Image (cartoon, helix red, strand yellow):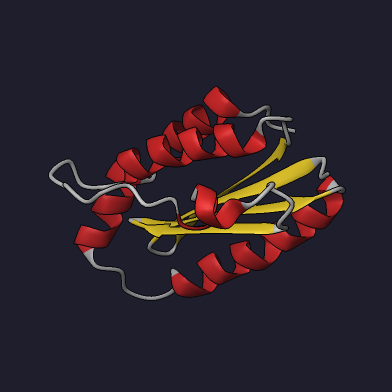
Length: 134
């Protein structure tokens, strides 16, 4: 199986990246992590049902996929690899996307929402609850 996972949390043009060690119970931890992160990123008034996308048991199989996607209030991507370096290079492409998308005028509501629902420290704390950051 894989050794590392690149976690990408996206909210509007904001993206946070974490390379974590892949635990043996990856799918269980990934599902719990995703639920907590989705709750944080959603508006407090949201009543939508949690949908785990590719992490849903009917789609995730044995966890051997190289990529899992969840589309919710912002997206969550989990990319798996044997090599942390490969994931680091992959993250740079997403970082460039964020840089390009954040250019120019951004609505005040969007920047306030990012501050409230996608603060790096809060996202990092959620990641650390479930995974060991490499």
